[in-house]
Image (cartoon, rainbow, N blue to C red; front, side, top):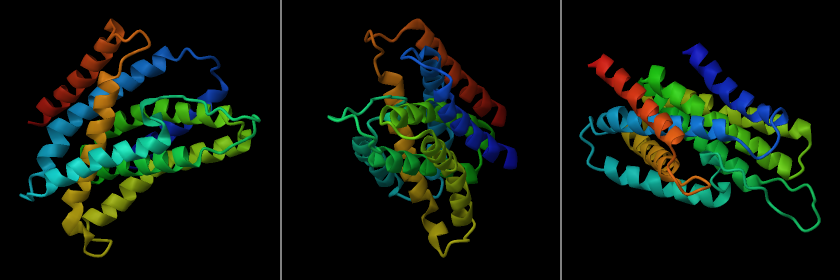
Length: 239
């Protein structure tokens, strides 16, 4: 698992620090990566995470999936949809350096929760989807921090903080599922229900979000079909 933890960290770190290399508003390639990872996450959630969450015959799992879905809506009131790769600069009257605390907290919590399913398997498939998803999200975070006139050292620090959140979620979830944290392992499926709800919201928002011209263009369609297709191939291989 160690190389996968490194992959999760590096994808977010390199995605975030690349903001210093790529200037301008044309980020079409990142948007295609986002579309691919959104489709991939959606397929993994439907094919693997949802069936496993219901495997324990807990009738309340669906309630927690709804809670996770609604919780992500609340998070986005503070993050401005940065999980989808949105890069909205905050305008301030006197152009002062203002730290977007709400965005940072909600994005870190989102990444922490995304890392939790890795404790229950599917690392080979899910880790790539999360890693790809974090590249444009981290790039958007770096862009927002730059737009809010944060010093370069501080931008590096908060990108690193974001990059360690998914691995931290994995380690927390591992301890939870093995009983290393009290008796909370009995509620693991319900916690995973919250994560599933978050995944469903994020992935479907990415998939159905209109582009600048309000069209689902061919390149995005190909990226989505590739994401779903690779997830299906992995699923069939495990049968």
